[in-house]
Length: 391
Ligand SMILES: *Cc1c(COP(=O)(O)O)cnc(C)c1O
Image (cartoon, rainbow, N blue to C red; front, side, top):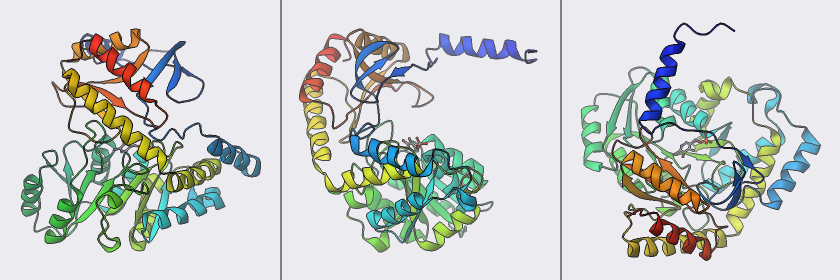
């Protein structure tokens, strides 16, 4: 094949990236996702999946998935608005409406698509979108797709949000968007304050609860339950299944007219193949476990507390997070890489997160916990962090 006319430029860019310590590589996992994984042939104790409740390989999910494949085959074969929408998808949408206490929900094939779809589906030229600066990339991209005007405010800075609302007072359609739990920092957005400001300024609110759904609140209903928000005050909520739910895909929950609008005009909904029905069947099984077995959330909390106490004693620069995402701030990119490597040599895998995923100078270890970790796993991690000079 003929090479691209700008191949040399690509090669140079890649070399620059490598030199800057920002080169990322795929690694190959063998076997199930879990706490003990085999990555590139090496057995590791993993603290870098988002399978927070340890459901990705749960027997009930496997069985539901396999049974549904027997019934329905594998591929959905078409978009939801053609023949791709199976009775499993329908059941899941209804169960999620019950679970979230919202009027209606709609499924998307991934969280990325859900965010792109909900923003693009509701907002257009002349409208205003106001986002927390640390929102997930898919939310920022959704803003771009929509061609609405974009404003940002400093991370969880409510005075900053208010200022943006004042600056855009002449605009009718305004949407405030925030992660419920921030994916790289693990902190929880001040949802009641956001909702109060939204009400005062007549703006709508969208919460991306990818890391809150299944985790926060007594029943795992997410940010809305955690903050005790009443049903009629609830924001539009996006939740994903690829994290705590252990499957794949996402949904948006809101009032009927919002959901109907998305079904009609969200491009990432209309123009894509539905997820396999078996994924919806497995997600139904996981919804049951999330709802009925709160012990996983309780165990996760106790592991998190144990880690925080130990890490503080070691003098690690732990960030202000009470969720399953426990970042240890390192700062320098190369230093973060070095510590990540040292941990790996001890068979421990953590996320090494560098810019542009996080702001310059805030490279960090992103440590995530799962209900399947043991107390001994946490001790092993702390010992390794101490030896790796992560402080
Ligand atoms: C993972 C994530 C997404 C994207 O969800 P996928 O289903 O993985 O595409 C969106 N928002 C946040 C905050 C996330 O962490």
